[in-house]
Image 1 (tube, rainbow, N blue to C red):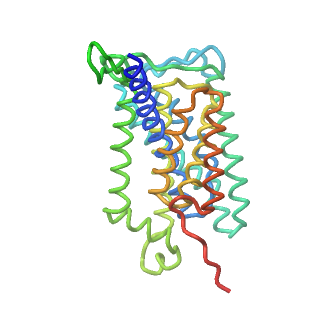
Image 2: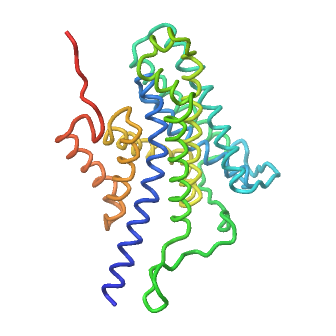
Image 3: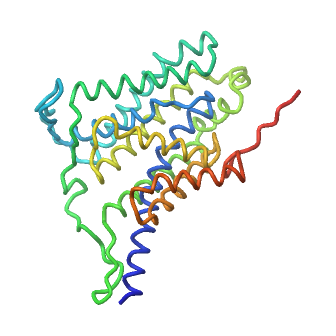
Length: 318
């Protein structure tokens, strides 16, 4: 009986870690795409993550609370969850492109110091988050229990005598995340648009000389980044709820840890880093120490390998 209980806890933690880790990976890939092309950390990414969750909540027929400019407001429509999630991701991608056009492109054209772009991204993040709070307040919002349809709360992977119950939502999130990661990998490595993005990331000047419209692919990278942030926000919100306008800030920090752990600019590294941090968190017994343990692992790995798991050492030529 004790062995069965231990196995149940182990499998629950394992799948829980893979589930949240895959969401971390999706979210971190948005950071990675922008960093690989512009060489900057887009701190507004966490705000787009939050915005995507709110977009989906509104599109599935959610009603906002009693605070904010849109108090007691609802769109009056109730889209199926998957339709709402995709539409919300497209809207969030559009917001990410608008942020790039308004906040980053003018600085790039003036060849400003990259630090100014980082400061600009922090300012944009604060503006977006405070705008959300102004419009819908700071209440927590939860999606309907049947948001994924009429599915059982948990699936038994054991027997009736020795049940091993895994939350169905965790399984769904893990499967969806895997499909998205596989699709993004194919897009980056197997399509001409993805190859052009990689060329721009490798050397924007040479790519431009070869006839690639670098500005167009910078916009595309921001759109994909915002799309991924929205999907991640929706998956987290559907499982744990939307914990106010600032709930993307914590995930933003976790996303930074993931890309540093995996290696800045490395797409496979972001996936490995996200899964690793998710797994570590899931096996920490006290939830209050999850973040501390995850960042401790990051610290230890960086002491041994400063460039991250799959990062490459920078070679300075004199």
